[in-house]
Length: 199
Image (cartoon, rainbow, N blue to C red; front, side, top):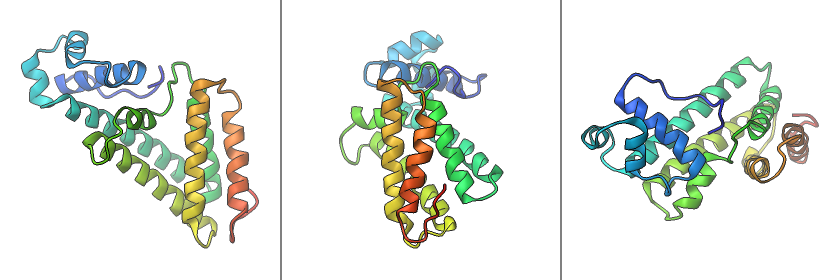
């Protein structure tokens, strides 16, 4: 979670635990952060912790669901403000590129979680899949509105492009990611029947 990323609201024990977990999981890795570490960070008792999160796995799922809710809110806001689907795709790409340039960026929380939990069907992996399914669905909707006759394959390629941008922003200089996403995305869209030359 970048330094300026939204945090869950403070004021309750659950929110405090989730805020600490979100910060520590993102910056240090999920498996490397123990429940005891989060307890020490929040000053919470084990009884309180396990009342809200029966297991660390439940906390990890809640963390990913929180991240997903924040992304959904932001992308739907962008979509609502855009004058059309092409502008929405462009502005979402710009937001993704901007995220990859933020201080403290350590890659995509969902890709990171998938790498740490490779087991198919694991609750953490299912949380990752829920988010990615929603994200792909958003791309399919916007591409369909843009005029692509079969938006699924293009949506898959845009997802791959987005994933690459997330990795690039973490392992290399993130500068220029937004522009690269916009131009590469436009090329993908234009290569499909019904696609327009600019996204």
